[in-house]
Image 1: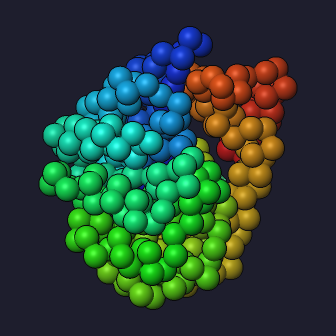
Image 2: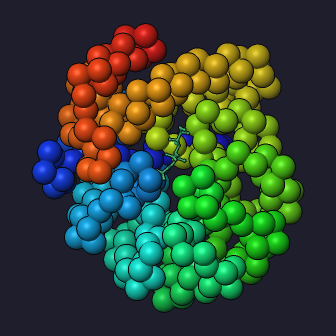
Length: 289
Ligand code: SI3
């Protein structure tokens, strides 16, 4: 059974502090209304890389407290500070997170040996399983098939969150590692990723569009490709509109139209403008009502 995860957003107040009530509302909406299989906590959509260490801890605590055992949870602990990653890996493991994930280290042009050392260090002292977070479009770090193979030599590294439009590589990875977990990260390319045999998907737009994505996965599994294509087209109309309106703040503004207090994005992310608010209302009316 393929799994669908929302990349959990963080509700912020205008001053950049965390709006706990709003963050809990989004978690509940994902569990109770979207009926997702899991949440990816502390990823790009969660604005993890904008946060202080204390805020990261706060979000990890809120998410597991609110979600409890209702859905699967993956905690993204990757950081430019390896010591922080190791600390957070232990912190979330102690909180009870069943999986961890870590973005490839970025900004400095690390060698593959350094990247491998980073992953092995993160998992070394924790009793948990790690999913590599590969997102070359934001990190500039592309791992090759052989490099994934080297990382998988560590049995605690169990899969990849694959946010990459390189479908040649995806096919090669799927074929070479049939037992590894591969979760697709580009929501607008869910169908081609399903065709190549991914085990599920994690994404930002599932916060609003999980039912359609689930229906697409089910249609794909039932062999109804025409229906799956139609559903992907409908999703992509929504995703295109969200991207055109600035996706992260817009996801929160559309959440507000659904009655969920998602707060705002944290600066330097864009703050809502009147045009953006009007755009979000239109997105809600056109694609989600
Ligand atoms: O929050 C996360 O870490 C993600 O799951 C990221 C996810 O892959 C999203 N990518 C980015 C760069 O935000 C996608 O869900 C993306 O927003 C969506 O496919 C629209 O392009």
